[in-house]
Length: 165
Ligand SMILES: CC(C)(COP(=O)(O)OP(=O)(O)OC[C@H]1O[C@@H](n2cnc3c(N)ncnc32)[C@H](O)[C@@H]1OP(=O)(O)O)[C@@H](O)C(=O)NCCC(=O)NCCS
Image 1 (tube, rainbow, N blue to C red):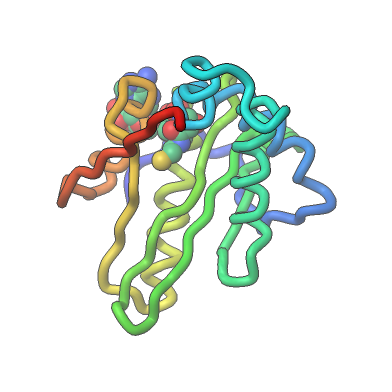
Image 2: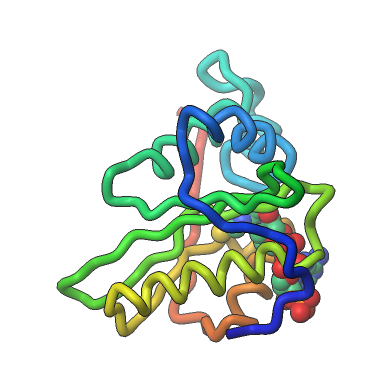
């Protein structure tokens, strides 16, 4: 296990009724580097909803899905982050899902602790491999570094290409 800088966080299962609203707020703070936000910047508001609504919808539907293992991190009784993964038994591979930390709590070891937790969960479920997809832009540098710190290395790159029709 990687060393944590903070010990006072609790990671517990995500509870949609209790946590959805707070997760939505966190997503709005931290996902300005995602494709929904970048497309909105380039093309204007899409489908009458802001990028943060679109990302929140994607994140919440992933966290709520039956197959997802979804968790939140709490600090002093407040949700400060979320993390998730899915497993593929046949391939013996776990895939890290949406994870994020509230802006004012970043840089304190919470993202690292959550990734330790996720990888331990995968191991406990018998997975032999772990994967994650992460964007290659500047805004995702902290995420890439966090993955590298936890043993991930680049396998392939992929590009998300868009156009206006
Ligand atoms: C990625 C993220 C979850 C990290 O959470 P965090 O709590 O700030 O991370 P930690 O404080 O635990 O830092 C863990 C490691 O991440 C890397 N890291 C964190 N912030 C960084 C920064 N600003 N620049 C470079 N690397 C950074 C470092 O490797 C760090 O370890 P170190 O401090 O020992 O070098 C957070 O930045 C975030 O929510 N980003 C936006 C959402 C996102 O990109 N999610 C992942 C989608 S794939």
